[in-house]
Length: 386
Picture 1: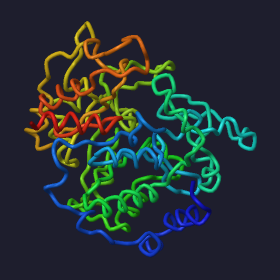
Picture 2: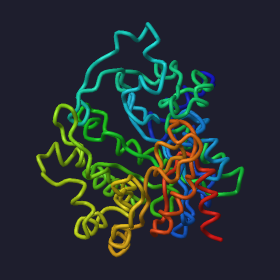
Picture 3: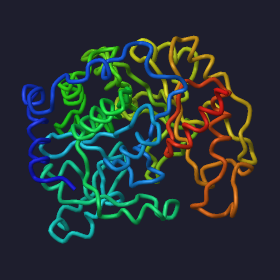
């Protein structure tokens, strides 16, 4: 999809801030990149991994489609290559989202590693240079739910963060509209422990591209806590504490999955549930601007898997001075409460009434949400505002 010169540019951009300022265009749309405290519009529609219901996730095509469909922000999850370049993948293990397992030249790279306390087998970004990673092609991660996306398998590269930023800046300028970027640092403790810390790389790249402090059209997010506190020391850009499902059961090997991994690594007994309390939210507000919990923290499901009554979470977070975004609102039947499923309700790919689910969360008072289909999210917001 991109010529060699494009990959070379990405390598140059990752090498140094000076190279970024020169090669990546510097501060060419300051009024769109740094719109100020009144941005983003509320409720905010964030494209989860791009328009991942319509294109393979974390590809430039997915982000492009999300922008076309009205997303206020796009979300690249970030991991590092062996040569320290930030790339957009949901996980550093890439056999589920690329064709790496089918390429004999990389067969020997298969490995088993412990990621956040859990053994994982496959191929990992940190074992590939950017040039090697660029020879791979993306594929649909959940084909049973999104069979139409498999038509795009093999077409798209793994994008660098710089390429995502370039796309966002280009589209913002073309549309005369601020489109934000909502990067997530994935497995930050793990990457720090292998000598590829994510935090400074991320901030340096954004600053070199003209994003400035709290006025920037940026939210920085993580499921861990220590790295967000480190990011706060590096930048005034808006920060978001992600909160996973406090009810997550342990992994098969007994590793806890209901707490930030940096808590687990430090021997702390605190869990995500502790972060959802009024006291926990006040602590989050000392280093973050917003909080983004798993959706059932805001509206718990009933025994019949329907939406129950909203909890006090939104009010508690707002009382602490935090904006509230939630994740992830998806259009396919399996992800929806039973009464919102449509057509063949047992179908893994048929779509239900996702607007109804999003509306329930808007009525609960959230400030924004992550969706796999920004067009549906935009329709829900438009209907809600009438």
